[in-house]
Image (cartoon, rainbow, N blue to C red; front, side):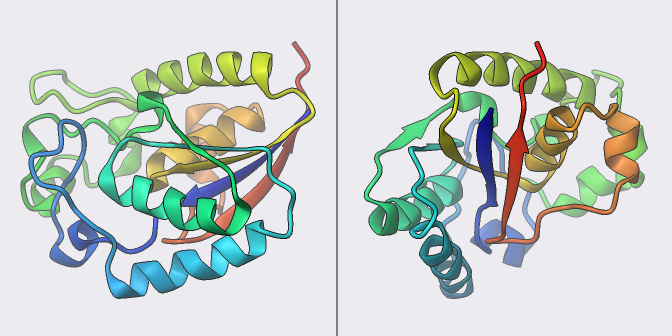
Length: 189
């Protein structure tokens, strides 16, 4: 069993300015003042949970979020690139509307055409499955904070609940900026 705390980064400059921002970061996008406030509330909550580890995406906004949580929980932040934002391909660093004009429906991202370099949900699930396999070897019976991005946390939540990609897209949970969702995962494999 592992207790996961799925934390979406707080509001960041890319959210406010409607810019796609993934790896490689063409421009560092920091948390806004509102984002810092959002995460501070979540960090206070997590300080009461007895967490054992914090693992974050390498992007600036998630590292800043994780550091705020680390200050309250007194845990070191580990970085794992597999928690990075959806690969945006040619849309990285561009107005996010360009990405959503090609993919207006989330289901269109289950598979992508490959021409634009955008990551599909199938590929995302592959990296998250590998991440989960590694985490379960190290953190059995522990409490782990994951700091990542909306789509990534949504699909990870689906993976933990043994949902298909489509089922995950249909369910009613999607993380708000700066929010935390507790999920107790019982490894059946």
